[in-house]
Length: 332
Image (cartoon, rainbow, N blue to C red; front, side):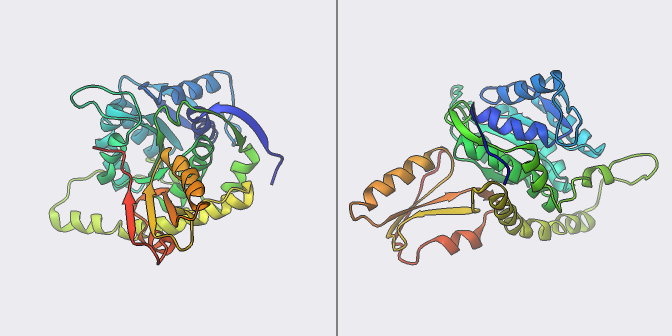
């Protein structure tokens, strides 16, 4: 463990700090509340700030979020470690490319400051309707509950996607986490390099489309062949839960902060348990501590890996004594 530096920052800067240092290309398009992530990346690259390989990441602003997602897909196919930042309707504009990126099993992390979608009205605050609209895309979904976690999970998502080949959406609550200013423990460049130990971060480069090593991608197929190809991705998804936990365990050795795919907090003999994801988890945890001190038997299950849903980890930490499970869902 290297010397830990502390710094005041919000969730957007915390996530972007890791994303900028662990990628070669950042494709951006501003949308509230994720805009500052792209702005930070742009400012750092403009100032010549290098990533952990000593290269200044290329930052490109596109004409829309749909263009940003297309540019990410193209950048991945050209061999670069690539990221983007988005939220809300902007995230929905990325869905067609997300299906392609996941279907091609391409390592990639996008960072989302989760926000309400516009229904009868626009709202810029932090429910989960946008990320929930992407459950079907094939992206793994990793949730952060605090500013510190937005920093830490960004690194865990990056190494997990490189090992799993399944692309990751790392998300945290818009405004409630993205704009909350907290003093956090920073990951140094050496910490991030240590996270990459034993991880093949050259996968995209080795599988890049180039004239010297031609391959065919993006074909049209009949159902017999097409469905076999879809089924062939199953083993990759089955490994995601284990890979993420291994990366969390590795992260704990480097940083001293231990996470689990599903974190349980509370009484071992809890009769009532709350299942939650996002910024409300910390409030629930403090409330449970207070009530348990007065004799209650309560617990909270904080889900970090939401897709693929970690059944094994979930059932492992659910106390056998539980009579009532309450799921707090931030989505209409």
